Image 1 (cartoon, one colour):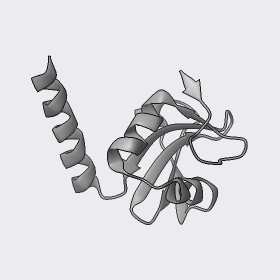
Image 2: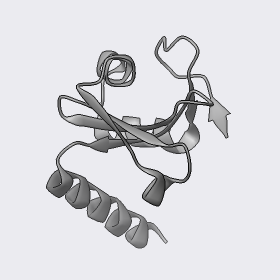
Image 3: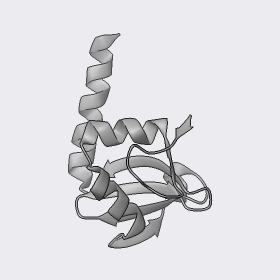
Image 4: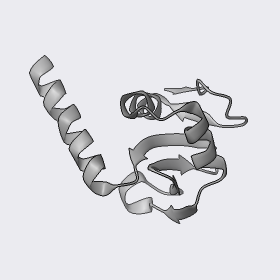
Length: 98
């Protein structure tokens, strides 16, 4: 499901997955907006996230977007080791719930 973002991101939509990841990771509305609209750099990421996907990187954040559809796909930590640790913790947390 796609929903409008909780913060003003004119013209952009955010997936439920991205919304959940943003909340889990604690990215501020301001950082999310600046990462999308004014990234330090951007690179394509079609292998992991599908066609027409790009990663916008700024500060400690990496945000995967589909610029054609102006949709936020997911929110990641820029640091791969932090990202892996957070994702492992999430998987372990869900394993204990079931």
